[in-house]
Length: 280
Image (cartoon, rainbow, N blue to C red):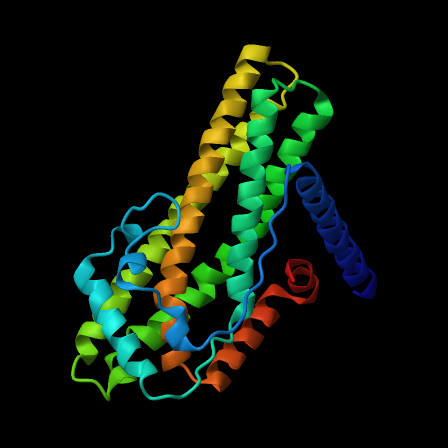
């Protein structure tokens, strides 16, 4: 049993090392890098103005097609909550940082694919780098984030934000629970869309590296990778805008610090020591 445990540990370590190499390739070939830092801000500062709440960060569309009434209900709650003068922190920073990490890497993948396509790269090393980068973004970074979101985080959000009892001090408790339900449904649907985009993107990146296809076919696959990675990046930016504007400040107001810390610990246990350290 001990030898089998050691063998499994070594195998997991080897897989994670390959993922790290892929990340280094992505950082090196991504043309330029973007660094993100998440900081806790008072809940009153987390909400933007009326116009920015309904504007996507890339393109000016309304935030994920959430209706104005739903946004208004949540905004009114956040405004009223911020008046109490207490400092409320959002402590689930691992999820927040992981979202930003995925956005950063998706943007890098978009630039890498565009670089290879525009320069009509056919050399094996460049195409292998693209496949490694796509594998890292889709099958490791995104997969790790969305595994926790789908199995733990969405359920936790519904428990804390879609329960009218959480807003018992308000006369509008049922409407708030319903509004948060719509927002969380939208986030969950977008997650599924991103997963499907990621799978299609990885399949096209893999196909582009085949030695049995023509240059014209390879360019077609590369252009498709560019198109899909752009769509993925836009979708991720849109999701983050929704999360930062409505979910993050709401959790900081509704959920106690001890409950947030407890959830953080559960996530670390679910990821396991090796994977959680690599994501960190």
